[in-house]
Amino acid sequence: MAILFSFTQMLLAVILIVLVLMHSGKDTGLSGMFNPGQSQFGGTAVMERNLTRLTIVVSVLFAINGVILGFVL
Figure: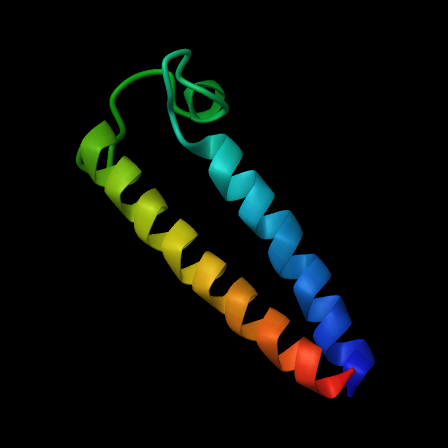
């Protein structure tokens, strides 16, 4: 059981790192490489908002999994 939660924690950590790097900052970040102009799905603002929501969901899952992992081990 602990192996499953450990693997999930590592997977969530990698996904969270990628999501944080995709956020645009002063230098447009990694997201500028994949979306240099306007998106065909409604613009950059919608994509940033959805990316922020996804980052929040993954970070909450990461925290919950960390707490569960602490109790399992």
